Length: 247
Image 1 (cartoon, rainbow, N blue to C red):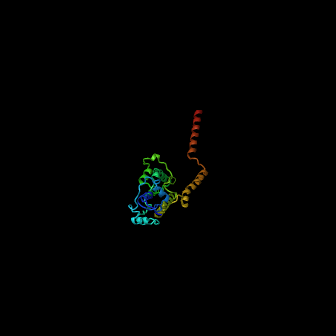
Image 2 (image 1 turned 90 degrees about the horizontal axis):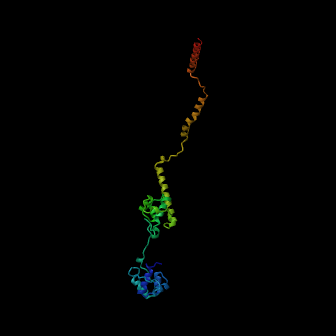
Image 3 (image 1 turned 60 degrees about the horizontal axis):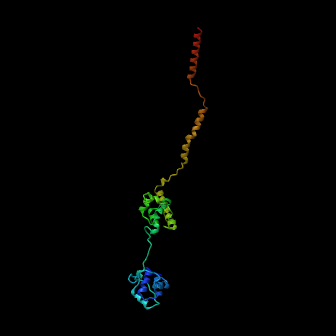
């Protein structure tokens, strides 16, 4: 059932300015008849100023007169007076005042644990601004020394479902980006493992080296032709010296 704005204030005005029954006023304001009686006796809603529902467009004068004439009739709100409240689907979400001091900690947690999230996603999850996100990322925030990364779900700033959905969207976007890059530049995807031909080319010189070394070890070492001549020269020199001494 739709009730008027500020129901107790509206009830105070109806009690003071109409001849409606407690049941009629209670049904219109969404309150129990005993509570309406307590307001009339001054025991409930003490100090509340009455609000005229006819003056603010929530009730017509004709509707009020109709119900005053019939105690069994019930008041109905004017259709134009019923507000339509819709939660915004775009932009940053509303964060209660009690939670706003925890937003820097939640931003730091998301930047550390979910870097795949874009700034716009963080803005929507936490109800913050891009400037604040940039300052915390660059450690230029005025209170950066006291910021401690904390899970926004545990802080009550966002739900686990909202965080999970945002992460899944970011991961899907990253997969699509990689697929586009692979299609636009297929030659860039080169593996680090060498091919079979390359491996044989690289290993061929290494395999030939031991054979060369083995052949070198088996060959006999030939004496240089100068060595025998040197021995004969020294031998003759000894004989001439001995002949001189004997003479």
